[in-house]
Image (cartoon, rainbow, N blue to C red; front, side, top):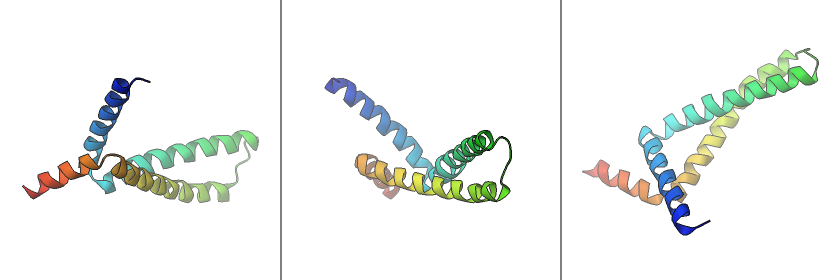
Length: 101
């Protein structure tokens, strides 16, 4: 890849991150982690279990998935938040300086 392409991608990613960061950490974790990632994983796992068990559902497994998937989503989003904070420190500095004014 050329440097200009990588630079443009990084710039776009940083702008997206700045926009998401303005909404706050809690909002990011709840929306992207718990609701989005957690619900997608719950649905996909439930479908996979239904297909492999020939439609016979184990409700204890479903209840445990209903608990585990949002927790997994929380952990995933928390990790992504901190990873992006390290990748784009300039976004954090800009937002911190705008709060002080």
